[in-house]
Amino acid sequence: MATLLCFHAHPDDESISTAGTLLKASAAGHRTIVVFATRGELGEVPDWLGADETLADVRTREAEAACSVLNVDRVYWLGYRDSGVEDDPRNADPTTFHSADLDEAAERLATILRDEAVDVLTHYDEHGNYGHPDHIKVHHVGYRAAELAGTLVVFETTIDRDVVLASMSAGAEEMPEGVEMPDPEEMNLGMPAERITTEVHVHEYAASKRHAMTQHRSQIGETSFFLNIPEGRFAEVFGVEWFIRRGGPLPPAPRENDLFAVLDNA
Image 1 (tube, helix red, strand yellow):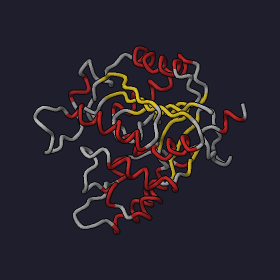
Image 2 (cartoon, helix red, strand yellow):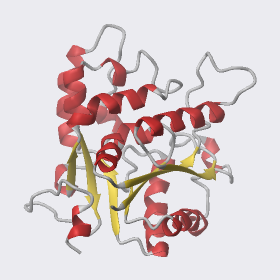
Image 3 (cartoon, one colour):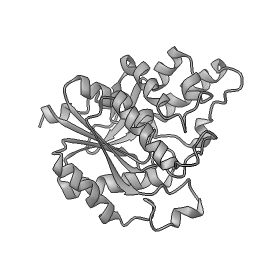
């Protein structure tokens, strides 16, 4: 049995990008941990938010519920504030993750890596999957924490840009009226295929992955495209999760399909 830690910027990121991998790892007997850099304080504020609760409170509960669906063994919070989207003036707030000292933030994560004897760490690619300041910071903090803790197996969570562009373009025609499909080209999602070393097939967990997304009701509401893509198309778009392993094989070598195989070969 090994221990997998998935490092994410905000609640809901774990369900969108690594839900299947977490479920697959748990089913194989591995221990799974999710660490959030922030509680998503600057996300969309739903109209049903109570006067006596904050968005951070709601998103914390949602993350814990989603992680329960994903059979996650333990959840940690690094304690930073959400930085907001790119060019938001709140990025400069000294309490945000974006503004955090790199080594200080990395040591917080490294402490968890050491205490939990983590074997495999995932964080984001250098673009943060779509350019969000907190996601980009996850990339830098993840690598630095791995160095500090001596964690040798490190994967960048990413998206195969070419596959997702094709799948989402095809799926746009299948969306119910009133549900808008985001434009993945505008979002500048993921990485080109030649950068990707690893793809984990999680089609059998697609229904559970979508169920985990429903726990994030404040950010992924009933009209979200995530919840309105037809079942077959959802499994096609979200049934593979992509990674870039540090030191992993690049084309023309075949892609890996298991985050733990490198441990078996060590």
